[in-house]
Image 1 (cartoon, rainbow, N blue to C red):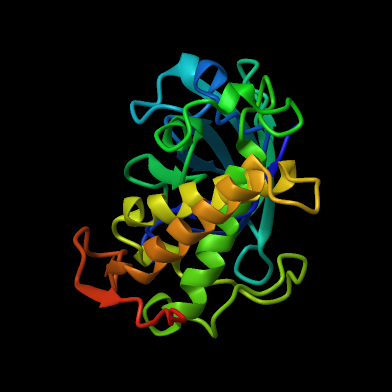
Image 2: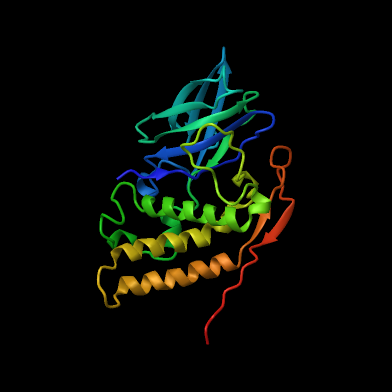
Length: 270
């Protein structure tokens, strides 16, 4: 079953090129043998002609025509007063669709814009639990793989980051509700996360914790509950060791400017 991915990180230049928000992508397949992203990454090319922006989404950084997975058009003539919604439809039988809003349009992006759709994919999870394919099809879908849990883990990780790093990421600790379209969306600025791979371990363990938890249906301990508890412990350890590289001005600078510890302590009862 297709899963919604509501928390992609879009590494765009919002000052000189394009400012987007409220992304929602569906049909992402995290399973290696049917994947329609490059280990969770996509790339956006946007061009404008007579106030119409044409958007193309690719699964490779070279943006080869055969690797286009989605596209759409949107009128940006009134974008200065109201965000413009772009609806994406699947191309090349990718199965990917979705939408996003253009908050501001300045110029065609000089290069393809990287989009990190998910912090982890099935191959990352297999590094911790190789027998994913032995899980029920309702957990590890034969087509989409562990997409449901990868999406949930990505959302939970980024919401936690926005709370723990509210000063560095901006905003008050959480995104505004996506259905409220009256205000321009600039924060949390997840683009400031300079090295999202730093979040992968926590995302992997969070996804597996959720997956094994969904398999546990008995009051007594089972293999699934023990695996759930193990990955819960590893998830907490991964989070407690966060020291994220932050790019305070990603519009003009490609390198991280500072590093910030998570600033949280875990208390163990003895």
